[in-house]
Length: 565
Image 1 (spheres, helix red, strand yellow):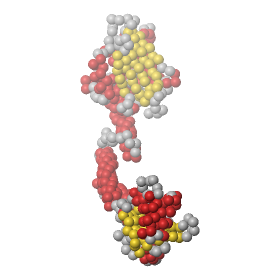
Image 2 (cartoon, rainbow, N blue to C red):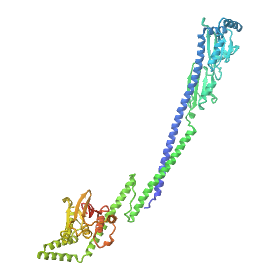
Image 3 (cartoon, rainbow, N blue to C red):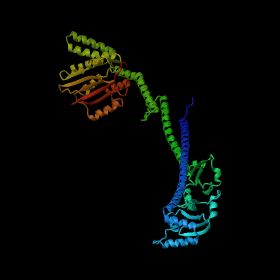
Image 4 (tube, rainbow, N blue to C red):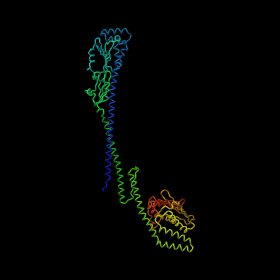
C-alpha cells in the first residue's frame, strides 16, 4: 500500500481549518455589519425625533412669547388704553391725545403702545415685526425693531392674505391676536406677531443630511422646508420612509428619512469592520499554519520512529510534550512498547545468552567438574573416616557450591541463594579462623521469592580478594535482604579496606551503563552479575556501590520482584 507523505496531511488540515476560519470570520463580519446597520438606524430615528421635537419646541417658544406679550399688554391699563385710542382715532386725533396725556403726567417717558412694542423688540430678538390693524378703518401700522413704524398700510388686504388657505410666508411664524375693548368686549383690532424661523430651523436641520423637515401652517402650506425636499407631500405615508409628525395649535412639523439611507452605515465603519475581518483571517491563517506544522511534524516523527523500529532499532524513543494530548499518548505508548519489546527480547534471548556464557566461563575454568565433584566427595568421606570433621565440613561446603552450579536451575529461591552464600562464607571462616565473621538477615516471608542464582557469591568473593584485612581480628560481612514496593534489595556490607570515592564513582558509572569488564572476561565478577541482572530484570535494576559506615564497602543489589521468571 502506498504511504501518504506528511505533506499531504499538512495541506489537508491547513485548507480545512482555513475554510472554517474564513466561514467564521465572514459570518462575524456580516453579523457586525448587521448590528452596525441596526445601531445606525436607531441613531437616525432618535435624531429625527430630536430634530422634530426641537422644531416644535421653537414654535412653542415663539407662540409663548406672542401670548406673553399679548397678555402683558392687558396687565398695563395705560398701555392698553393707549392702544385702543391708537386703533380708534385718526392719526391727527391720536397725536393730540398722546400729547395731552403725556403733558398730564410727570414721567419722562410716555407709557404708550410705541414704548411697549420697543421694549418687546428689545426683550425678544426672535420677534421680527408686529402689525397693528384697526377694524374701524382697516389702517395697519407695521412696527419694526429700533422704533421703526410704518403707519397707513392696507390692513384689509393683509387680513385677507392671512385668512387665505393658500397663503404662506416662507421662514416666518405668524400669530394673530385679537384686541378687545375691556368695556364692551368688542373687537377693535388685532396684533400680528411675526417671528424669525428660517435661520433657527436651518440650524436644527444642518445636523443631518438624510433627515428632511417640513413645517406647515394650519392650511398645510409649508412655511419652511429643506432644500433637498421636492414634492414632499408625495412622500407622506410611503413605506420606504420613516416619518415623524408633531402638531401645535397653528403649525405641523413633518420629519422623514429614507429607510435605505437610515440603515446605511458610514464607509469608515464599513472599512473598519472589513479591515478587522481581514486581519482576523490573516492571523487565523498564520496560527493555523503554525499549529498544523507542529502537528504534522509530530506525526512525521512518529512515522519515522516506526520506520526505524521496522529496521530492528528498539532504542528509538519519541519526545513527549506537556500537552498530554492524543499524540503524547501515542508517543508514551510507543515508547513503552519499544521498552517492553526490548525487555522481552532481553529476557527471552539475551538473558539466555548471558546465562550460557556464564556457565561456559564456569565450565572453562574447571577440568571435568563432575570428576572433581566426585573426587571431593571421596576425599570428604575419607577425612570423616579418619576423624578430621573440620576438613569434612569444608569439603561439604565446597561440594554444595559445585552442586549449585551444576544441578540447580537458573532461577532459585532467595532462601537457596542465601544458603549458597553461607556455605561460601563458611569456607572462608575455616580459611581465616578467628579473624572473620558473617551475619545473614532475611524475613521468612521473603525466602520463597524467585531470583536468578549466583548473585551473592561473586560479591562476597570480591570482598575476600580486595577488602579483608588479615591483620585485624574484627573482619565482618553482613548480608541483608528487604523488600520495598516492587523491588527486592540485597545488601552486602563489610568493614574492610573499601574504595576511594573516585573509584566508586567510576565503577558505578560502568555498572549503570552496563559496560563490560574487559579485564575479567573469564571471571564471574560484579560486572557479569550486574549484566545478568539487567538482562533479566531491566536497566532499572542492577548493582550499585557506596562507602560503608564508618569504613568498608556497601554493595546494593536491586532486583524486581516477580512471581515467576
